[in-house]
Amino acid sequence: MSLDQCKLIPLPKISNPKGNLTFIEGQQHVPFAIQRVYYLYDVPGGAERGGHAHKDLQQLIIAASGSFDITLDDGRKKHTWHMNRPYIGLYVPTMIWREITNFSSGSVLMVLASNRYDEADYYRNYTDFLAALK
Image (cartoon, rainbow, N blue to C red; front, side, top):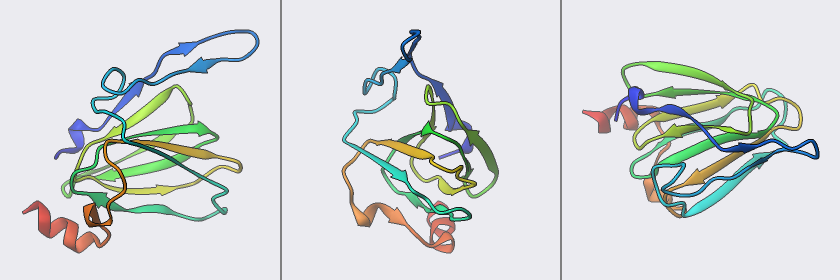
């Protein structure tokens, strides 16, 4: 995979004086059927998350609340996105290394995933990830 395939995806935003609403439909707003949803919260200041890549999993990563930075790496180049809008998702295809940093206080990172959890799908060592790209 290439970093060029990673992209910000605007999600529907229904504005209302009583509060906004955003919805996400699998294979409509994301290019996969959603098989799992999880979220990170109460991340301590200075902590880093990620540090892995997936062999087969695709994801849409959303700052449901607060903000964070996510650096994606395809083994040739890297790019960092600052995520801070709940109506914008970052599409991450397979075989992209990710590092997530700079969590704001009270932030919530939500992930929509194309597959259920499978530990065998992970590259948790960057050297092994790079070797698999060859």
